[in-house]
Amino acid sequence: MHSAQNDKPDVIIREVALRDGLQSEPGFVATSDKLRLIHALAAAGVVLLETTSFVSPRAIPQLRDARELMDRVPRGWLCHEVMVPNLRGAREAADAGADRLIVFVSASETHNRKNVGCSIEQSMADLGAISGLAAAGNMAVAAAIATAFGCPYEGQVDRSAVLAIARRFVQAGADRITLADTTGMANPKQITQTVAFFKDHLPHTQICLHLHNNRGIAAANLYAGYLAGVRMFDTSLGGIGGCPNVPRAAGNLATEDVANMFEALGVRTGMDIDELIRAAGLLESILGRTLPGQVMKSGASA
Image (cartoon, rainbow, N blue to C red; front, side):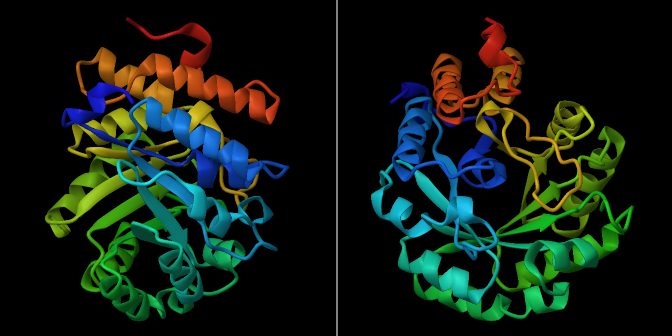
């Protein structure tokens, strides 16, 4: 275990390769390989994992081993966050020992229907029951709002509509809101303005950014978010992933690339870049193809 994780980092990097990344893979990755990746990430100093999602195995067959994986994950120093679409998923995640429930909904009606097969209002209907379940199990709840910066089907998304969804989550007990650029439509100016808007209206709620790299400017968007005061970011080992319900989707920002950038800026991540590169190499060997991450090819800056 890398000792740097004992120091309080300046930014928190949430690793999402095991959920967001692997759900987009054409084939199923064995549970044993997922566990190898978790141990490699932990050795690099990762402590916050989006470990899996309790969704229909017909919809996302790549995550059909969610319960088996949760039964076998290392505990203690790792925080296992689990994404759930509804009350049924939340019950399964709670029963499997999730540390935190991530409830997701799209800000775009069309994307929500394509993603989870129901309206935004139907997605939000379980919120009170999920919050009660989480409170009873002493679990934290966070919200993830997809297409928060634009939708491939509806175009621009009204910032006030995103805030209205976020407020309902906060009122139900969520202590963190992830704003997801699911489509890679955001730009740095939009990120800056949106973060300021949310900090003004929800000053006591932690904001996390989840930025896809569809148009090649996710790193610029991430840095804009950092300058605007965001201190938590979702990244994916090797840069794998992308929303299955976005046409021509590209991947995420690579964890090792983001960690390298921050460390080069003197912003502590608590991560070991060399160990992240090893973990990305392991993932590349498991998937059997070259991954989009750059630092794994070129090495750390220093």
